[in-house]
Image (cartoon, rainbow over all chains, first blue to last red; front, side, top):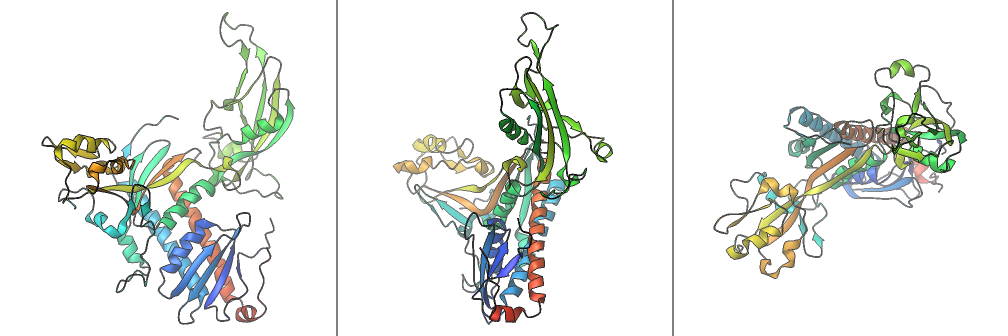
Length: 111
Length: 364
């Protein structure tokens, strides 16, 4: 696989101020696409956000973001990514503390 | 409808969290809590609120599997972790098979396929990924040897079923060949298949298999042999709501209870029916109760949209409790790589000009 493919491309038709743009994210799938879409939609400044996997044998997703008030969709994307990372950190900490402190039913399972 | 003795938190009875399970359809599947959806409600992202609402509790743990509840996240997040567990948590598996001799009835390529699928008990975190152009080193490749010949055993007891040595080639016959530093690094626990009893081939006397095997690090999306789990799945927590204005007639109480998984419905001596909330998670949601016209309107079946009961079964080196943490790690690495690219895009001088006219077209 050619490693020269950029991770993110802005597709043709984007607004000059990036208030509406479609980002093509290389080497990603529904895994990140749907989670990122959800996080972007949690932003009240986002008018519309949707993603698609254009073809199952193509290894990329298209993420469409439209903003209110001519704000930059790229900034919103970065904010969503950092919020998503905070979320993952919170889940990770909660899992670790549950594993350490919660009463867990331990049972014997033979392979 | 929540009784005072409820073992479930009261917020569980909030209808907005319910997915309706009806006779022939499910309703209210999607989450609607987005900014702008409900007037005068703020549903924008709030980490403090998320931390407060998030509940994660590990319920059951064995040597091979784990069950835990993840409450308070959207399906897209839970699904991302599930997908990563299946497709993107790395493991080690045999990728290259060099056949020096194979006189068995099983063809080289079929044998190679079977060898690839053997789960190996080696920590993948000790290895680096190897691309096609990389040279094999002790940091990215693990070597095994399989050299067996089926022979008649001269001293086998008469009438014994097994008269031959290596009649069955099993995964235990793989011999690890340490490379470079590996002998020291893996001295405590030499790499071997997780299961020693996998039959790889059957041999007749005189037949021989002599192959060299190179295992590399990979992920499940490339080939299922790198999948670290037997299953990683979640289901939504079931909820059974009785209608207080239409109680179950006492003479039908037993029939009603039989419509559910054992333990879910309690029948008291007078024929009074109640739901045992501690056993609700065992409910199979068979919907049997909805088939009987006499129970129409008495009961509602629901699932809680943001209460995920995860089950992960490990089939690799990872302990079951480590797997979820690995998936979170992979998720954060993905986020970091996209974020880095997005920040590079914003920092790019003339990014506006590029977007304005001369937009870089995506080549398919």
